[in-house]
Amino acid sequence: MRSLFVTFFILVLLPLSSAHRCYAGATPGIMGCSKTEFCLKIVDEQGLVVKTCDNYQKCQYVGEGCTYPSYGYLQCCCKGDLCNPASAPLVLFPLAAVAAVIAAHI
Image (cartoon, rainbow, N blue to C red; front, side, top):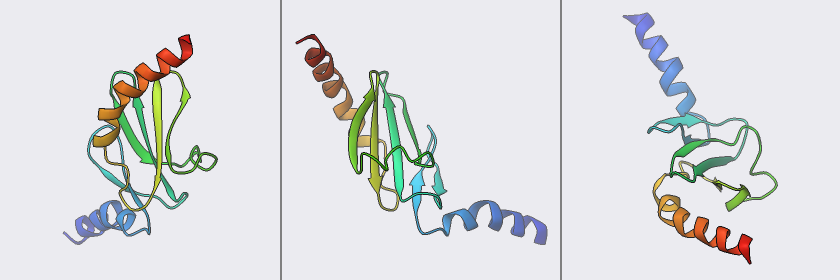
């Protein structure tokens, strides 16, 4: 029983005790982020949302906000505990994608 508690503490509570947390994965989850101060959310053109810590430092150069680093997906960076929920960009992504297509043809 004691080893079960220790395992639970190491796998669940210890990562959550870091100073910075982000929503993670394509399904609801939370992860501790020790390598970066940014959370990252990527939304593809079909609306699939992937959330994670910005461990590859994609946000370091663009700062907070959303950008289109490549056609077909939206990258949103934010600072703060659990700042990358899935709801807002899903609403804005279709409008932004249409605007990007129109701008590319002008």
